[in-house]
Image (tube, rainbow, N blue to C red; front, side):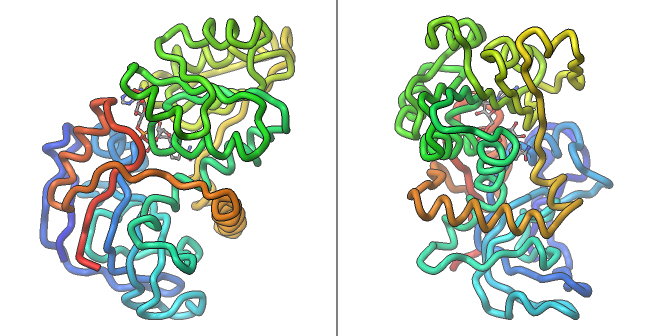
Length: 326
Ligand SMILES: NC(=O)c1ccc[n+]([C@@H]2O[C@H](COP(=O)([O-])OP(=O)(O)OC[C@H]3O[C@@H](n4cnc5c(N)ncnc54)[C@H](OP(=O)(O)O)[C@@H]3O)[C@@H](O)[C@H]2O)c1
């Protein structure tokens, strides 16, 4: 099968097309013939700094859609030939991917495979950040970093549908502001002083919930933007900053809370809870017409171009790889 392999960590040029033997499913596993693979920022981190890479060579790719090629012993949740999407710990940039059955989901009736590839990581992550970890209540205000990216594209919509009073997005450049405004955000803040901007925009009060995938200075400013009793949720470290710490002296003065979330961590530790989360996220998205816009498609062999675009900080929405014809 064709696959894209990282043999050494480094730049996008390290994404190397290779022929590999097609993997077969073991007990409890499903082999999926991949049609579309989602490109995630975590794939960029896997390639550049080895994020969640246990050993090289490594095939990146966390989200796929396609058809079931074969099932291993004990699998009765999906059948050969069925259209599915899946959340992987890697291996999605390939014509065939093997996944634990618990991480494979039937494509909802009427949904195209192309759409289905854009959702398995993005949508449950967004839903968990708003509903489970962030525990947004109606009438609260929300601040989202990376508002024009893939996860950011659903966070604005999810927050609005959950009853947020105002939703602020943060982007690094003006060009992305217009795009994000169409996705549930009331106002887009541009620039590193977004904490001061958010405070000014809320009459000095601050926001109730801040969602931060960047870390470092951005995380400190997310905390600074919180109102009394506010919560901040860390869900990434795009800045490669050292791990954050927070103690009583940081949190008690405004009685703020901090939390973190990882969909891959949840998938590895608690597949049953992942299924519950994914079902809730897909149901909510269907009920409220929430989607992640796919803005660019690349052939599998051109995965490096997709990574260059994602790293350039000019992309919006979701990028996909076309792995095989439907
Ligand atoms: N915890 C989880 O379960 C989970 C799941 C999925 C994704 N994530 C995280 O969510 C974030 C978004 O992921 P995504 O796949 O949807 O990607 P994305 O948002 O489509 O693209 C990454 C975005 O990160 C922002 N960014 C900030 N600092 C950056 C830097 N130093 N280099 C490049 N981009 C930078 C950019 O927006 P601006 O230029 O506008 O700042 C860029 O658009 C990532 O940090 C990812 O790791 C976490």
